[in-house]
Amino acid sequence: MKKLLLLIAFIAGLSKVCAQSYTYHSLKEFRGDTIAFLKQNFYDQRSYFIGKKFEVLINQYIWEMPLKDCESQGTSPYIDPKGKTYLCGAWLRSMECTPVRSDTAGAVNTASIVVTFVPPYTVDDDDFCYNQPDDITPYGVANLLKDYIIKDIKIDIFDRRRKY
Image 1: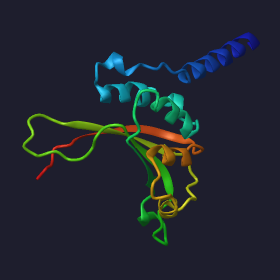
Image 2: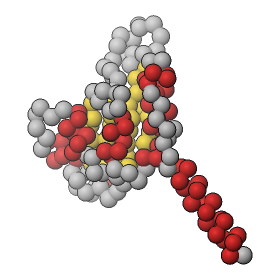
Image 3: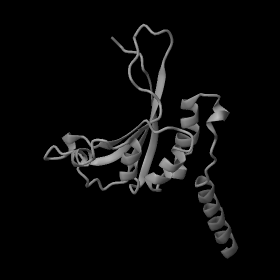
Image 4: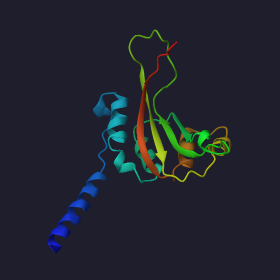
C-alpha cells in the first residue's frame, strides 16, 4: 500500500513537472506567421507562465519579437463602489494594430497577448498610467509590471479592416 501511494505521488509530481516545461519555437519555424508563433509559444504553453512573474513572459517574448506596445489593463469601474479601476493585467503587442481601409482585399489580422494578473488588485490603474514619464517606452512599462504574477494568458486576434 505504501509503495502504491509513493508511486501515485511520484506520477502526480511528474505530471506537474511536465506541465511546467516550456519549448520555445523560433519565429523562423513559422515562416513569418507571427500569430501562429504567438499562439504556439505563449497561449498553447500558458501553463508554463501561470504563477510566474510577468518578467519571465517578457524576457521570452522579446527574444525575437519587438515590443511595440505594452499597456496596463484595468478592472471595470462598475465593479467598484467608487468607480475606480485597478491594475489587473497587461496587453502586449508586437504587430501593427491601426485600422486599414475597409475595402482592403482579404483579412489583415493582428494579435495582442492579454495577460491577467493574480488578485488582489490594489494599484489604481489611472494612477499607474498618469504617473509614468511622458517618454516611457513599452519596455519601460513592461519593467514597471515585471513583478506581477500571471494568472492567465490569452491571445486576441482581430481583422484590422475598418467596419465602416
